[in-house]
Every structure is written in structure tokens, then in C-alpha cells.
Image (cartoon, rainbow, N blue to C red):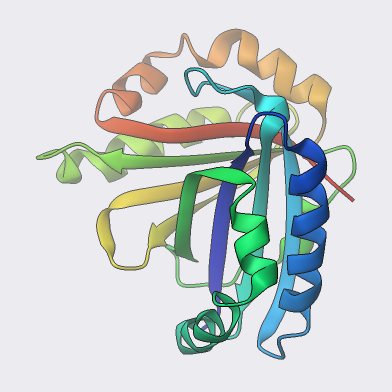
Length: 209
């Protein structure tokens, strides 16, 4: 089964050019790996992360043929100078290996529409709240699905971590996202769901072509 490598990184202050240049070099090396089956990147424009400028945040997803393939490639790539130069230009907001909770695959092309808004959130279920998670998540996302312009959401489990979850939410346009945002945060279902989660990072993004 494929594995998704999710990286949400904030470029260090004053290093925008270095971040972009070193990332391009590292991604070029990464794309030469035969077990990389897909990739994409998204630029944040809104976050709830305290003290974080969304303009400094880039979300990247790399799809690997398997967890074993990812591990073997990491052993080869991490010692490279290209990796060291790139890693020196950013701070990690989230770095996870994830798989769809429903056991299916994720077609990254569904996240790449030029007009779409894609939300990424990583949150940890609070201790003792595991039994509440599914019911409260279902109530919230069933409500979100009634909004105009709401395309879909996918929930992800984190490899090696039973309490952390990631979610990707796709809206058809910025207009649909903005209109929904006017009321979503006031929904009782939203408050009830967020009460049992600790948000590690949240980014609303547009695809970076």
C-alpha cells in the first residue's frame, strides 16, 4: 500500500530565496527515486497557528510505493548535501507518514485544481476522548458537506501514532471557502469536535504549480 509523506514547513526568517532554491534542488533528487509515485505542493494563505505567518508556510506531499520504499530512500537521501542545505532553511510544523483511514488511496490530482482551496489539519485526540472522536467528527463533517462548494474530505491515520490524525478538506473555490468560514467556526458541531482535539497545525492553501 502506498504511503504519503506530509511535510508542513515554515521557511526561516530572511531565507525565502534559500528555501525556494534548496527545495527545488532536493525535490529534483527526490523525483529521481523510482518508488516516488506522486507529489504536490500547496502555499498557505491562512492559519490558526499562533505566531506563524501563513505566507512563510509550504505544504508538501510525496507519495511512495510503500512504507519500506520510503524508509530505504530516506537512508540514502538524508545524508546528501542537498538535503542538509534544504533542511537548514525551514522549521517543521508537521512531518508525518500518513495513510487514508478508509484504507483506500488518495489521487493527488484531486487536490491540484488551480481554483481550489485545500485545508490541511493535524490534530491529536485528547487523552480519554478516543471513543468520542468518530461520532463528533461525523457530526461536524456531515454538516460541512451541506455547504455550497464543499467537495470532499479525507481522514488519515499517522503511521506509528494511534492518537494523531490528519485531515484534508477541499473546496471548489476561494469564494466557497470564505463564505463557509463566516459560519463554520460558530457551529456547535465544530466546538464539540475541537474540544476533544489538540490542533498541531492548520493551514488553508492554494496549489502551487
